[in-house]
Image (cartoon, rainbow, N blue to C red; front, side, top):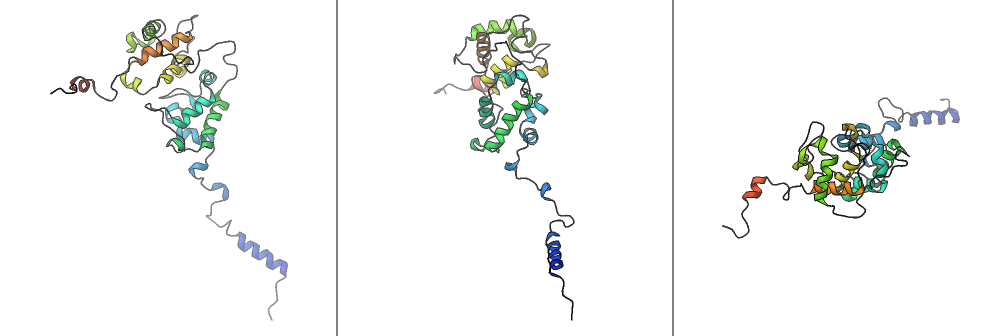
Length: 248
């Protein structure tokens, strides 16, 4: 007659057999399981895959402004940053990232991106005692483009050249393609915070000791906006050769 195993030994062997599947050779552990795209909440991954291509590694700037610029983060409210990240800016190079607006990210992922940008790169108090022009055009004023031309000559022409066509120190900012890809708000942001990664100063540094005023910013943006093509997307010759309605 075969000897019977002690009940405790039988239970131990059963546990080993069942547990062996979890630790079998080649089987990935729980920590190595790949997350679904909408479950990723790691800021570094989300930023690298969705933001770095335009705004640069660690927010240092690229084709678009440096999100890691503490001056920018001091004037831009988090709610405004979240709205732009989620909904994009229609007609510009900034796409919508939220699913509700046609993007790929969940609301929670949008929150991670916007809150962590500020948590990691903002510097509280950087503008202490300094009154910066408002991020948004609070007066909703269209601005005075004619006066903006004079403001441009005072604060911008030395770098960006006559009529904004480019100079030794700065790029062409009345370039047709550039103006068609930026909104008035982005122009305003650029005028206020500059592009530190490109050695372009903020509103305080264009003319030493003479910072730009709220009106200066609004008016020079109006001047820049007035340089946009009236028929974006069409070559100039095509516009000129288009017959008037009813013409033969």
